[in-house]
Amino acid sequence: MKPKRPNLKIPSDKLKDIKGFEEMLDIMDDDDIKKMTKRGNEERRSDPNDLSEFLSTEEERLKKLDQFFKQKIQNITKPELVASLIATQKKELDRTKAELLIQVTPLDSVPNMYLSKLFNSAFSIKKKE
Amino acid sequence: MRIPIYQELILRNENQAELVNILEVNKVGHVPCYFLTHLIADSKLPHLLSELEKAMNQIAISPRFPYPIYIISEHLDHHSFFPTAKSVEDLPKHFFKKVKRPGVKESQILMRNTVLLNKLINQPCEEKMTQITMWREGQKKLATITKELFFYQTIFKSRSKK
Picture 1 (cartoon, rainbow over the protein chains, first blue to last red):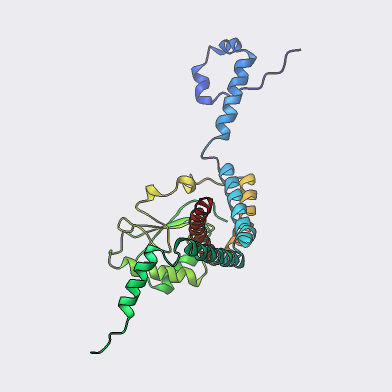
Picture 2: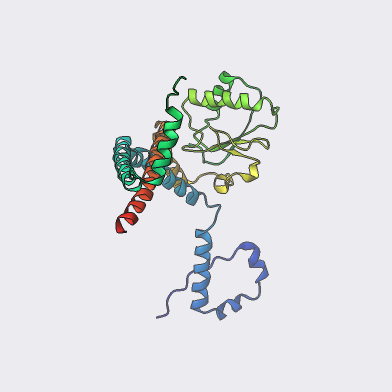
């Protein structure tokens, strides 16, 4: 048994043009018809002016916004968590800096000697003659 | 609920009370809209925008959520409160649609959207956006400290290898 062909809707303005050539439509096989109907569906789906599609997109957008403001923001913006992390990192930074300074600047190093000279010249008390 | 397509409003020299009235009558915030400012002198525009900002804060409307409220002005590059655009053509195309009478299916979706919209309008969106800004500042500070720490740790490690 042959599969039933879908009814092709021909627009009324095109109907006049094909008058007398109706038999030509029989030339088309099932694959051609499938292709045509498939293309028609795709065109309908991607119609940018489709109102229901637009409203569905809007519904999705509003749902996501609602979720974002209700749940996600509360989860990500925990100020106490960031503050504690900053405090820990600052402590670690100070410790590393101090250790590094001890390593880099021993008491008899050249920069230390210059620094002490500079310091002494700036803050030494001048003796009255 | 109206179909969420752009609504055009023209700003004149209104005071805060008149602006509140305009916002409420036109249901600004329930649909995307833009204000045309071509009737206002450039020198008066900042004052009028601050009046509009106060009016919107008075009736708790966010200029970004759930629907954007744009200010169209050729002489305004940026505003701290409102999103701006040079012309109507520069606005995002998403909300430009042909007006059609909604069918049964569309009406049902519109009803659902109304519920979601009211939920969003009742939320303090601007307050939450301020929270995000504060949180972002904290994250930036943390990133700076971590970067500095990584720099010193790299030096420390390279010295201890020697």
